Length: 470
Image 1 (cartoon, rainbow, N blue to C red):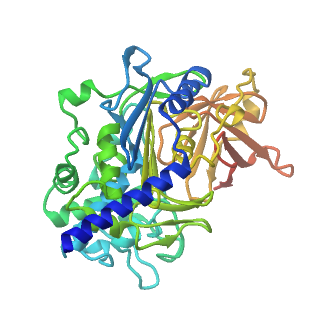
Image 2 (cartoon, rainbow, N blue to C red; image 1 turned 90 degrees about the vertical axis):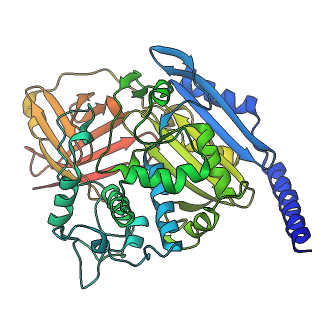
């Protein structure tokens, strides 16, 4: 009788889910391929994009494009991409599993699992907990302040664990722990480090043992075998000119963004989260979206996953971006639809809108100028004008950009990125080709010799303003 009731419940769930899918009108393979073709051939947003969809009827993979500008092999469901910050979901899943096993508690202080010589900042008697790290409420900044790469060729490879600990030991919190959401890459990296230390193994082994092997994800990992390397799509930058980008490695920040995976493997991951497959991780996955903290009026965050109400539906999602790739993974728990989008270009508007549109067709796709900034002709600017822009500018998320002049050329560097050149389109407006972004400097009328503000504009987001700091 119990087995019969279980089977009946499953059948009813599938019927309800199928009705939801029919109402949502998930786009057909032909429509998805049309979207991808337009993105690549018309807007030059990528070289190769792969979309994975999972629904009650099963899985499907739709792809268009190639492995690289110099690699004519077509991309498919077995092509590897860097998935960037979607790695944070895997890190938080390990946390949920270790809580379930009684190995750690969400409210355990981070300091409990780090070496004795590492100072973890506190504030007003409160300590940073594992829960704070997973939900980006630790008070730690978006990027470590002691990251100073010399160039774009694998800059994080020379940022070891000791340097991450040095950043943490020297950092002073600017707000109370838990007071405000602030996305933090070093925070989640430290979470992964702490969990690995508690488990007594390196983080890569921990991810493989606790997530990849139980789910059968054989084409996902940090370091790659020769077979996996042969299936890794080449990364690219910019939508103005698709330029090959080197692959980055993250030895100290692995838990924040170092995983590579395929559409087929990520569909396996989404299938487990949606309950299509029996897995020992089911209860841990469910726990990830139960405990929620506010991000904004319309969004919350669980353990790793963002949870957002959009156009009448609630979606669970995370995206990722590395130097040469963009990725989106999300699912609708009510309709039981999951979507995965992988792209081998970091420029342009990314792929988030495609993922959201496939989950909920009432969410519009980006087009026209919302996809690619209009590139204007470069002009010559007097070096004395450029000198007014030299300095440091702080954004609301505490990221700091440093502007440097070298003769008649201007360079910009954020905390978490190497230095890149910006190209003048007027005396005050510059193009950051590597990221398809425009930078405008506002010069204080009372102090014409220096700019007071740097305004960053990307096609897919509102303008961000960085104020000059000393």
